[in-house]
Image 1 (cartoon, helix red, strand yellow):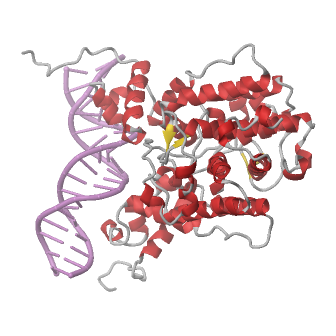
Image 2 (image 1 turned 90 degrees about the vertical axis):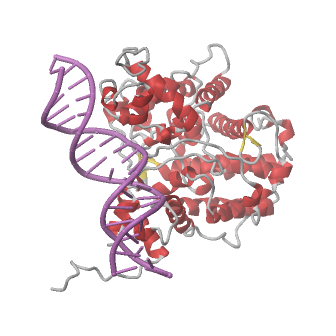
Image 3 (image 1 turned 60 degrees about the horizontal axis):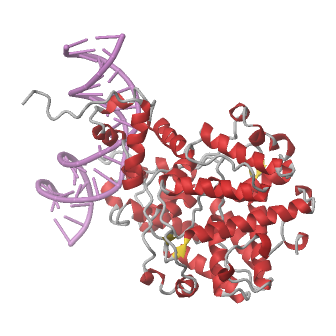
Length: 238
Length: 238
DNA sequence: ACCTGAACACCGTTCAAGT
DNA sequence: ACCTGAACACCGTTCAAGT
């Protein structure tokens, strides 16, 4: 027996290896069980060693999100515009379904990661390319809310999380390079006191989505819709 | 100078006083800054004293949620059915707007508190009373998602949170006394492998809301809608 | 120059000891 | 019987000391 205790193969510990080692237990036991110390132990390493590859726990979480978001399919080339958006959003949902922590982490971080921004920009671009004006596209994106990223947060579901909520206005330079995200900043800046993000009237966005949904429900009710026919939109309504 | 250091008036410390003392700093500095120890210190009390009034931190959070949800207005008596639902949901939003942590805490706890369940039951009941069949009401409630409780979680907002995500099926006796919540358990239980809650096909609910929204966007686009006209639903569409 | 152990300032909660 | 200090098993991160 040598002097090293029961040394594991000791791979050189890259940032990628750290991230992969973090995602696995988060999927299994949940993020709240993920700590720097535990992660280090799992890698057979002293906690401080992690700080060579991630600046702090926040950057670790960001890196984990990037890894998951990278799994969203690119836009399908040939389909119709609305179908393409639909397909993309369902792909995002599929990518996040195996990582229940991802949605919460995305919301918990103070700003979106580059991959998240790029994905958002791309979805918004699909609306624009489909002939949607800036104004409507902007409200539509807000109306989709969490759905754009592929998750719903139902109240009766058990999803975890603690934290405070500050809303720092989106710094304009953070959005450079994402033209579709930046576009409505000038075009659709409303007034009013409940302004968040880059100058959106959050109350208006809320009511926009609420009214669209309530209106859709009422239309379905009048037509005697039941879920046996499945799909709520499209051919059923148009 | 007496021997007691600078003793504050020393009120007898009830559960209510604990909850009120917890809500205030959560509104101000965020929940992540709220700890049992800090809360105790703020009350001029040893940490253990809190455990006489709340079993643990989880029950403290639940109690804080109950306090906030209690601020939602009761249903308005005379208005039309759709307007009443709309008004109620906007009241819930207003009640939660000053407590940015509430939405996250509600989602983070493993089950809804009685006040949350009662509110949900009441909103569902408003749909039923308005002539909506069980099936459509069920999907509508899911489609409203977080909106039912008055908050949206926009991706670009900075809302915080950590935690894992287990989805324990809704225990049937937990829903006794909330007839409208319990109703679809038998009526609208779908099949499929992505079943959550009390047997809902989460994928179907997701696509239901997604299609309603995409369809609404398309309809607005075809009519050349702009946000100058404000309200997206109602008279504009019907 | 590189790495890391010990330390700091925290947690939620238990539990035995003190009055 | 009541209350509570100390303690336990954790955190994320700093920092000085070791090689």
